[in-house]
Structures are given as C-alpha cells and as structure tokens.
Length: 87
Image 1: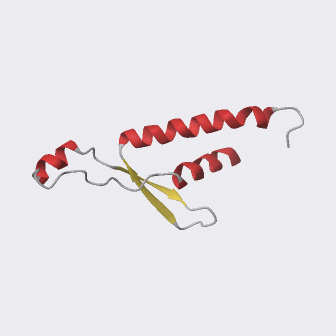
Image 2: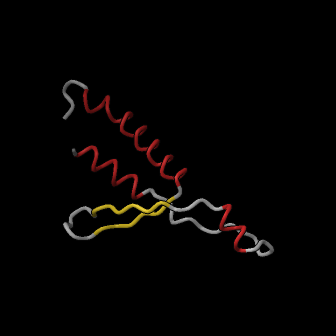
Image 3: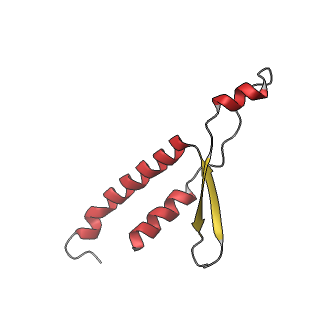
C-alpha cells in the first residue's frame, strides 16, 4: 500500500505540464488541433486531505511513459524491500 502511494506521488510530482501547442504562426489553428493528441485528464487525491483533488492532464503517450517509469522505479526498489534484514 505504501509503495503504491509513493509511486503515485512520484508519478504525479514528475508529471509534465499540460500539453502545449507547438503550431507555428503560419499554420491554421484547425490543422494544428488535428495533429495534437487529445489530452487525457485524471484526478488524484492529494496526500493529507480527504477532500482536495489534483487534476493532471497528459497525452496517451505521456501517460504510458509515466506508467513505464513508475514500474521501473518499483522494480528497482523491490530488491531492497525484500532483502533479508531490510527495514
């Protein structure tokens, strides 16, 4: 339970800001909107509060990358958590 909270906190804390438009001034806005992936927003409970929520918006690729990095972090922590005498 504690590990999942830590991983979630690290994922949210390291989350990049919402998508920024990278369209140049000579492109029409409609074409730029088609090229840009639609953001996916998720709400997370803030640590220490039963009411406050934090909204995080990222593209699917960014959510996938955040999940991969969280899994890698968890896997790298696992040997130290399961080692004999670790506490």
